[in-house]
Image 1 (cartoon, one colour):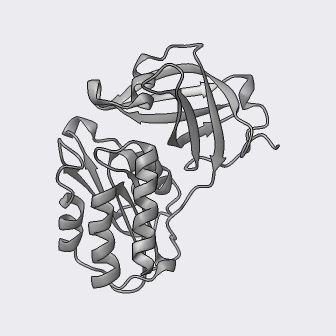
Image 2: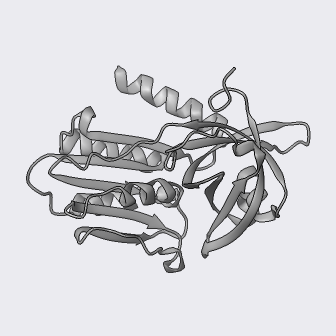
Length: 251
């Protein structure tokens, strides 16, 4: 089985640092990065972690924020005592700690060849949003909307002059699932074809999808939309909810 999409590889923690009040960046490297494919910033990996029981192994999906020679950065949203196995691991990890990962999986990039772009997401999507921003041509126009816990989570991002970056505060993400959709409904819709990239909590995603597909009539080829998590669910139950949602959408 090829390493990279099948057999897991063992990486080690190189360093970790807070990049905002509620986001921690962990740099992973070591010999397990040998033959790691290039060009996967914005793609995803599957972290293999200990669950609630010591004998339980769970997987959690995270975006590769940066990739350098034999190193990758992974950004974790911290949730304190309410965090899941991944954020708990990140908060406690130290240099030299080992972790198994699967992947990498492909990245999704907004189509900057369209007339304008719309990028929308919450803090879990911020690493992927940041990678998207770094690949935008300087002449790009459009909107970026990001939901964060606190003003202290605002990051300096290299946004083109023609793109309006909006930070929305929601101290309890998931509980008010209309924050992102309510804001997007109020933006001045630009002329021409839009390429929209959306990733957020499950119910927030559904509110955005309803507006973008049913009101703005975006076609599938112009819209990437995904839920990265679901309030009150772990990754396994979230995956089932996504499957049921896809089936219902086809009816």
